[in-house]
Image 1: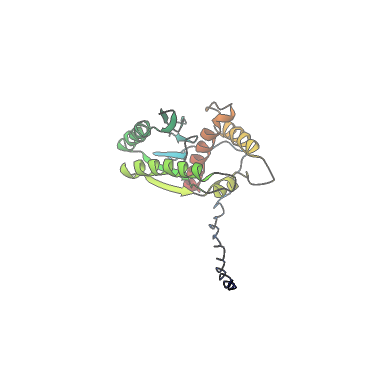
Image 2: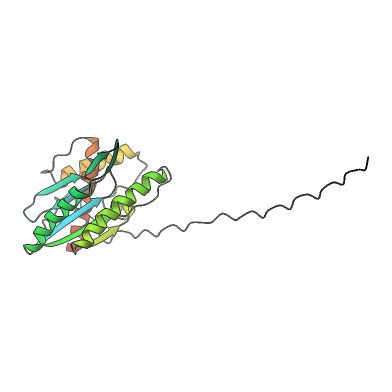
Amino acid sequence: MPSRKASPPAAKKPRRKPVKRRKKRVEPPRFSIDLSKPAPANPPGYIFVGIDPGKTGAISTLLPDGRVVARPTPTVKINGQDVYDAYKMHRYMRWLRLWAISGKMVHIVMEEVTMRPFEAKRTVLAMGAGQGYWLCLARLYGFQITEVHPATWKAAYKFSKGRKTTAEFKRDSIKLCGKLYPQLSLQLQKDEAMAEATLLADYLKRSVIS
């Protein structure tokens, strides 16, 4: 039998070099916060709104008379799944619009959506969808809106010092928010989103005052 010729070895495909993702530069806070003092009052005619995007997030508003109106992100069940309730989100923004019509300056700050190593892509995409809803509604009503990196505003409240678990960070948020805004009743761990939204609004207020 004729001998079979050995086929030449297949050429190795060149390995692709891993793409290095550039880390987004996180700006340091522009001011320091004295946490031993109570929260400052709103400047006359200003309303500050903090938004923690995501289905488990929240929106909180600091009114000129000292009231705090905090609500979890509106969701509704459709086919057994929680989805954003765009109608209730719109109603909240329309309520803010009534304040703007009465002559108040409505300023909104939203936490940027970032990809953390322990979070699933699906979770981040869902948070991005919530961010899109709030941004769309804010632009629709002509509100001034600012986005802030989580590490930036949390550093102002000294949350980044020391190694802590997520649960410990949540307890710290609730504790600090209760200290600065005792009129807002937050006790359970699930209230952490409303605490963070309120602290976001407080961060925006202090950045305007400073």
